[in-house]
Picture 1 (cartoon, rainbow, N blue to C red):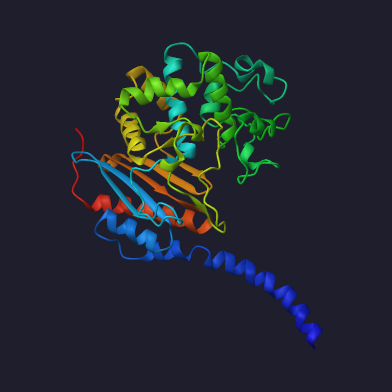
Picture 2 (picture 1 turned 90 degrees about the vertical axis):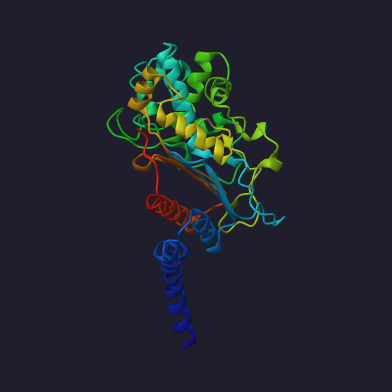
Length: 352
C-alpha cells in the first residue's frame, strides 16, 4: 500500500507543482488588476510596493503641468532606506531608442545609408552571418533581419556578466537565419549589437560618445550614461530577481542596445523630446519615423522599465521597478497600465 502511495505521489506532485506555478505565481498582478483604481499616482505606486515589490520609481510629464517624480519601497534590502526617485537605473533595451535616434542623425548627414548592407558595413562578418549581403541597416533597425537573438541562444546566461559584446555576437555566428531578410518582424538584440558596431566604425569612435554629445548634451541630460562602468554604483538603486537573494547592481551588460544607465527624469525628458520633434530636425524625424518606435520597455535581471508617450493625453510616463521575474513583471505591467488610467481621469491640457 505504501509503495503504491509513493508511486502516486511521484506522479501527482510534479503536476501539482506545475499547476501551482501557473495559477499562483502571478496572484499579485491579478489582485492589482482587480483592485479599485486609486485617485492618485502616488497611491498606486504605494499599492504596488504593498503587493511585494522592493522599489518603484515613476516619472510623469503631463502637458501644461510640471513633471512629477513618485517613489515607494526601498533603495536596497540591506539599508532599508526609502527609494530615491533620483536614483540611477539600468534602462536596458530603452537604450535602443537612443541608438536609433543617433542612427537617424547619421543617415541624415549621409555618414550612413539605410540601404547599405551588413556585409558592406562589417565585411569581416559577411561569411559568418547568413544573408549579410542582403540585410540592410534599415532591416537591422526594424528587427527585420532574420538574425537570431543572442539572448535566446544556447550558452547565453542572464546571470553571467556581459562585459564583452563580442561574446554575445559569437553565439549567433554561423547559425542559420530565422527567416529571409525583410520577410517579417522579430525582435532580436543582435540587431542593435551590430548597429553599435556599425556606428563605431563609421564614426571612428564609440557611438556612446556620439550619443552623449549629440543627444544628451543638447537636452541637458547629465544623469544618463553609456554603461555601468561610467557611474558610481552607490547612485544605482538595487535590483532583485525573483528567487535570488543577492542584489544585482554589479551584474553588467555592456552590449549596445542594452547597456545604458539613467534616471527616470532623464529618460522622460529624452522621450518627450523624441516625440515632440525638439530632439531631431524635420528630416531626421522623418528618417526615425520610418525605422523605429517612439517608446520602449527594458529588462535586465533586477531592473524592469517602461517608457512610453501617451499621445491622446500628451503625457510621458516612465516607470522603473527593482524586481524581475514572472510575478513582478506581470505586476509591473499591470501597475503601469493603471497609472495611465489614473492620468486619463485627471484634467489635462492637450497640445495645440
